View 1 (cartoon, helix red, strand yellow):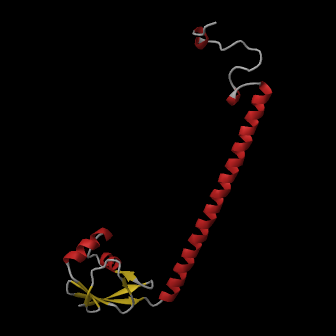
View 2 (view 1 turned 90 degrees about the vertical axis):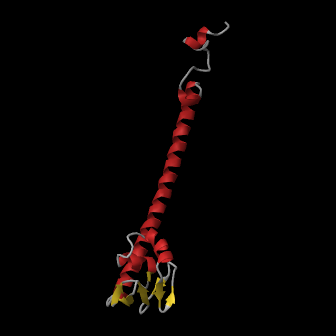
View 3 (view 1 turned 90 degrees about the horizontal axis):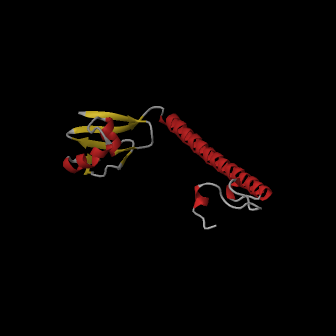
Length: 151
């Protein structure tokens, strides 16, 4: 029995055909299926799961013949698919650009923050972070650390 398989792209892979015809349930099974069962493509044995099947290719699987055919409006579908692919690529490019801009803004904000803290440290005469004891005129730390000092 011959079965026509309509495709809406330029080609379909052998794995996709096996999944579409419910011969296998997942792509991972294709490798093992092709090792165990012979598949004929245009009269020759085929065992490559990624083999591209084009319009008018004839595949025989378990005595069943499948013929690849392009759908009637395939040119429109291919153009629409290409346009969708181009739009996704443009969106990805825009996302990358936006991420780069965000990273640059974050770096500038971090530099401003560090400069502000450095200015506060200079102004208050304190150590890193703007907190802690002053460098000018204090005798030492207060609290448990000072109890262990040798003064």
